[in-house]
Image (cartoon, rainbow, N blue to C red; front, side, top):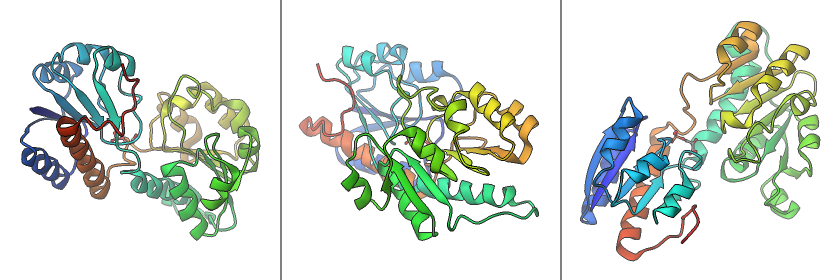
Length: 308
Ligand code: 3PG
């Protein structure tokens, strides 16, 4: 069968080779659409494919409608807010992710961004240290837990909020459980966001939460820009000149934020949390294996959309 590897932000060559080897070995043909410029290129490329591997590529209802043979889409990564799950289910297309495969890369970047901000973006100004500061982790899943554990090794105190985990599970993961988002923000010198973008979480972090943070605190977002209420963030940074914001997912109002707040804000030019050779290999090969397995046996273990 024909498998499309559609990556606007391409994987490392080693990951692409591994993906091709797994799928060829399983008797499939791999076609690639990398660094494409327009969504129309993706729509055109899916016409005769049975399976797709994607990253943050947008699998909209239009893409699904243009792919009559499509059986499976695997998002090589964690967040699947870029896939229209309802359209996929309606078309009987299985959607999967590869949970945990790129988590370490994102966790390392979250810590790197904290140090970068603590050291005033590597300018000569006197900075501060992470040791002894309290880190709040909002959602203690695959990435959040790694951030907590690595930060603990740097001497930080860790609090975590996760409605899907028991206190015992959070404690076993090395953090102190916190039971409300308000309490978490109020206690955190650094607050690392790891919630997905869902209708209930979109714009859920705004003025009220951000201004609860202690003096000199830094908000760190390696999750999704959509979870931030950008007007609220702007006002919070205006009213609280001690607060900082660092993110791997560039806000729509970044130019205005930079102009107003200078070194108190920083965004990577392109989302790069998962952009390491190791994460590319882990997530890419897992996606290829999941597709080969699904096409051979129907294994739907990592399915994230509703079944029909
Ligand atoms: C994810 O959800 O896995 C991360 O945001 C990584 O996204 P990317 O594959 O587009 O880098």
